[in-house]
Image (cartoon, rainbow, N blue to C red; front, side):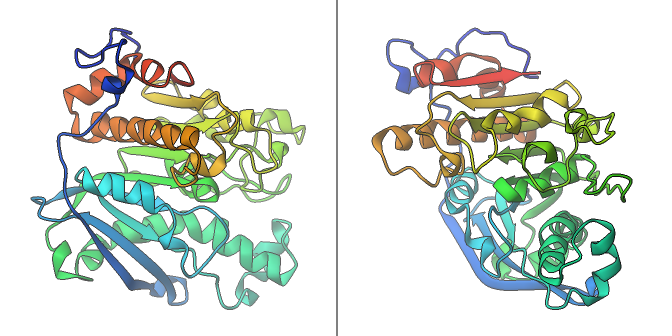
Length: 342
């Protein structure tokens, strides 16, 4: 789908780069549902606060994007990535944002935490919430889409269980990668975890997590870790996946290590949006930190690429597929943002 044809879309005029911006053929007002939650009785009645955004008046069912927020666990984490959420909802997608609410009591997890190097109670609670419960929240939501619909009359008949995308930003991409099939292991000879979910048809990660040896703590391993690891954690990821990152995308780890999943996942329908400008920082990938003229442009361009990917894979819109095969993003950005394909 994404093999480079290099021909520009007919609407993309190199003399007028703004014409190369990908735009949807759909434009809806965005509805916002907040202060709702679901309870997972199988995980000690764990409560998952939700924010849901949807296209007002769109005929259902609609494609569903489960978006995992960046940052630490928080009761209000689901309010993050609002810009991505509104952009995609306006284009016809229903966005479900689960918060990774901190678990109340880590005591039941003491043995598991100790086996994975998180014996301290506070670190144990953080690890369980962030890195074990995070990807499990996807399983729960997919299994309970009918319960999500029941949270508000506006969602009745809106959620298409056959068109699910898992996406997220920064720390939330640990859940995205794990759900796509990446294995996690925190200690040499320790447990290996697999939280793959077979239902999603595509994945998207902005500011993606890299391997442990590079300073990330999300359990993804690489032969470069010198820990007796012989296989990349990401080697089993085979479904369509868009990664958005760049030279300015750093939070203490080398930015180039954020492309490890793109490089080592199975080839085919994998795309990397690589921003070559350092002023486009980590939260610019979340199209959130857009507070300079340059960042504002990059936010618009990155958002355009993310929407084109989803429209190409999920809706199979010919104009989106053409855009993803072309050099439109390079022309649009004056060469500042590259689109690579595997």
